[in-house]
Length: 577
Image: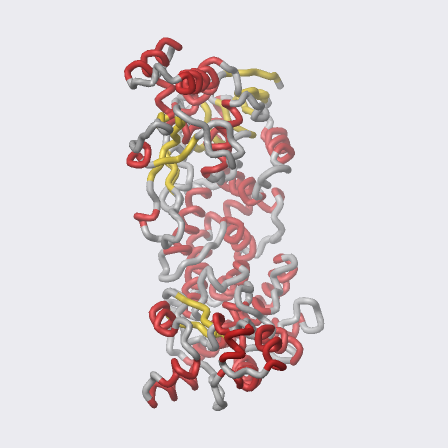
């Protein structure tokens, strides 16, 4: 292994010419805009940016394994995956083993764009992702509260065109076209910046760090042994942003599949089930890879041994069945009202997919009117919500998945073996049964806690979480101040208790955006009085509103009686001791 240095300009040129590529073992780009800007500031200030590790590849390695090109036009919604690159005929290519995030950041900053979702915009709104380039202000330093010395910024063309006595935004990618220092002087003259010492010093400094300074210090590994290279890669990625082990395993699958590209297939499938089945989910590659091991009845531990050639070829052979079962499972949990908002463990999808594969992946399982299908759906839902609320996958997924798989293996008909699974975990920390204490714990959930939306979606199963959803306080939160409660006639000896309990789930409900805005901070009894008699009767039944005085002084009685109604509804949905 040798040590070498080179300029940023030469490095960017090699990336652009695809002489520097990414092996499939690399995770995808994850840096945020501010990290990129801090990297550029560090380079301008002459700070070291750590060493890199390159792997000099031989022709047989380039033909036997998959490699990917660097991202240049990053788009948080539409372009986050690296594309494969054809290495046939390429001479003198190098794979980047350490430094992908830093090199991709430099490549985007100097050659490309970064489109991130604007604040407060909806995730799937394409207009929420303006394309921006990196610019450097040639007339002034950043604000005093900035930790940077140079004013780098991601801007749209329109934003960069706005200039005044303290702002002249230079697109830093243009520095690559300036080959000599005389070009810097020419640019300053042509753009009437020659009289500014700050502009002259700043642009000259940018030229030096890109074209002159050998900032890219790297070790060069020349070994042809894949095991050695993988070991080096794992060691150097054990700190910082931890390498997802699934990325390493995925690279091995990619190298061993014959007909399909494993990385592309899994990325495409993740994108499909996360956004195109009518709900918004966020299943990861880890979940899909784990599902492959489970559904093919392999040892489910994430290890290189379990991703051997024989297993990988079998997974490729069964890929259509695997994805069909997972797709059907996702459609089913979506029909239950789940989405990324309340599916708090993604591994719960795997036993459902295993069961569906076991019974032959029936068409339209989630909508079938057959009696046995309806009964299995009820069993699956009870198992699912109990598993989520008891957090049985929160310890180690393998310790839950293995026993459940064994239970499903034993079925002799098409019925989901909920009772068998419950019995298997009875008396263990993964018990699915709810005691009275467990139910009381659910009533102690509060506004803003992770499990609260899950419990509310269970209490109000008719509510479609795919719509704009608001967790609303029945008695409005703004009213729980000492002065307001006194003004509403609440006795002083009750005020502290009311303030302590108004965020409990007993005072919460799910509302669509428009009804919630109409309700706003109205007193609960006033809001209800605006409904017709029929509307009020339906609302009280659906939302578990007790027949008690609903004025402010009786909030404690409302909470007590509503919690009783919630307990009864929860008992119908959960598995009891």
